Image 1: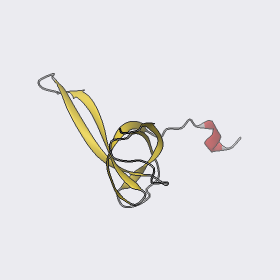
Image 2: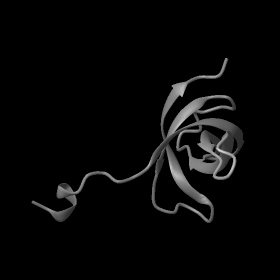
Image 3: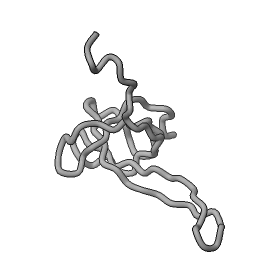
Image 4: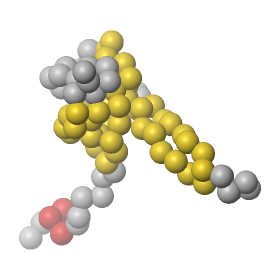
Length: 89
């Protein structure tokens, strides 16, 4: 049995919203999450933007997608779009 078959998949997954579709085969997606503030113990909403690879250029602004961590594809692109969860209206 090969060594890679024994390990579980350790790549990260996130659900994100497409923010920009102006680049060819690349989408800017925003991941939102909530965390508790260390000092004030209040829930704070945060967001991070990632550049994700979209091979078929099928997503548009407002779509909810699932992204997966991958090898570096360019200077900033480290994620790929796995599936479209919900289309924008």
